[in-house]
Image 1 (cartoon, one colour):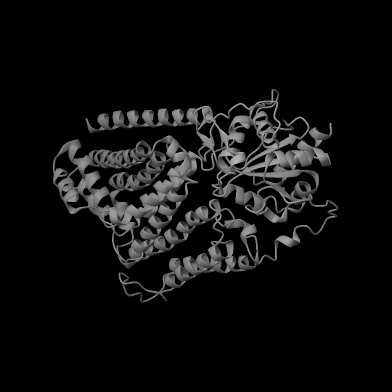
Image 2: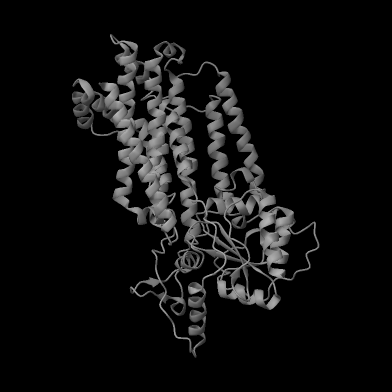
Length: 558
């Protein structure tokens, strides 16, 4: 009977999840807005007979936004963080939660409860149903986050300054909690009530047992779940929180079913001890390091310009250096047990962490640090950079930089010392003047893939040469919060104002190119403003990106 109920419940759950996934994919396929929160706004029509030059500029912008390429349509771009990425992150988080001191000791006790006095098949069925309830509880938690925030809010979280600042503070609290300063616990009355209901027999008892596990282990799993939900919510995926929780709970539930099927394998598990708290402390260091990314997002979007790349790197070097010393037993916290000797796995982990720490040190002088470039602030925020000036060497660059001060140049820093325009109309006008094709880079301050492309692909000598010599580069930040001047503000038919630089360019991307992900690269003929080739997204293969640029040049020169 239990087996039939479990199979039926599993089928319903899987079918429901697949249906939700399909719905989510359909939603993003139909979505025309940018992740920065353009909200599907439509520009107001402007008269074609202007006298004021300000009105002329607005008219040109509206014509640009309304124009469509009848031949080429953009290739759909992957989300910045796919649902598979969210699932894998959740699964890894679930595996980490298994090693927490609140859960690991409960594993053999719970499995022995299922196997004691039960035949093997029945014990497995009960454990499998118990695991299914664990998954159900956490997925419902993820869906609750989506319901509370809503789809539009989830899409805008990644660039909202207040939310990023709150996430930064939240992860700092989680990290300090893991280091042992305090514990985040739920009210004891909740735990007692759930535990009392778990004494009931049958399916209801198993459900309340799973609920008791979730509540009792919250002091250990809470920071992991919180970090995962923050990352999933800011990924822009509607079902990101639910999928993340599915991955987390799936990793958490698997051992209970497997050990119930093979109880003798429990003997191979290491005994509980001080090493469990060490895992918790290491995760605390990682939480602190991860929190800095959210603070960096706020600093970039609002142009505070104090949390530069070298400051970020100094903090990471210190955090990971302390983690290495902790693994070697040179640093202890109040909850740590006495460490008489260093085990081989712990020594190897210390070697890896300290090696990574030393690897980051040259970044203080501008080394690109390609393996972590996606998380670091842009290279151009570095005050002392010995690396970027060397990129222009090695080829005959006879191209003179464009004359005059570029619009918005005081707000944005050109990556890798490239000659960049930050306004669409200004860049297209210059491209017509010098008879070169246009390369539009729809980018964002919070876009990790954008930073990775700039550090890993654009820095290639041949790619750098083509971008700097053969194209006019226009970078449009879709998540910038800078208020536009009154003359540049555009009103929508609904009476809403597009009053920031980010809203202006996010709508351009959504309405003209039917895309809402970054990075998004468009190669245009400046004369007709038609696409030369199908646009592309992040591609870390240098050869592929070179082919993309070469095809654009070939199409332009036809």
